[in-house]
Length: 301
Image (cartoon, rainbow, N blue to C red):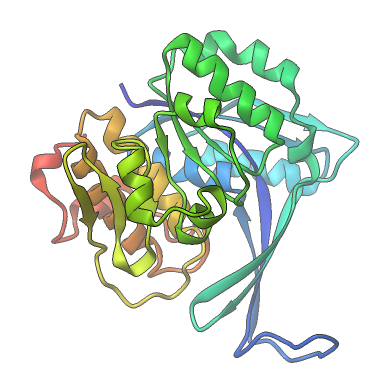
């Protein structure tokens, strides 16, 4: 089991660390600069693969040096890349990240990720049917996201939908996803007029709202539940949400129940923010098992 297909963005992160962010028109001197691998889709694929998932990546990169390195990085992490396409009419995607006091602000440029079209979804239908879970995010065109949800629903394949960056989703598609994992700001945009408590009650066992250091909130069909986070001192929060989603996917496809999968995801996210980079801090299964918070009852091999 644990056959996970991630359909999503693949990008390069250009990361600046500074004491503060510049005001409009201002130039300041930063503390550090690094280039790292990113893209929410690629991040979630790497997080799942490092925790033992059998992961295939579906996405698009440019025909440039960044594209070459992005594909190589996925393969190095044990991810199947036969469905990662190269295009010449777009550069590879990129994210420009500023980190101040451990928190990040991001400008995302889709580039080749926007070359993903509906024809590819049709061609992938047979492969989707053979997976245990498909993970998608919002760094792809909305019509592609809607089509993936529809195909998976038709094939009775579970879908984990991480709606980031935030945008609205029609009720039909929302009903068809298995899990949806917005953070608090994404929740407010998607469900205007609802409190988090009202939202999770309306979509029990489906809507999972991540609350940062406060943990995650969901409704188990009987009552609202808060799964607390594991408190650590953050070095870089970039990629924490992607780590959570990738780990949660591994938990669910390993046969853990929803509560245990959320705890597993929270622990992976906590470990990830103690190192630099979206993918740089993502833990392996061995690192998870070496942590004193790891539950032996999770029994993931």
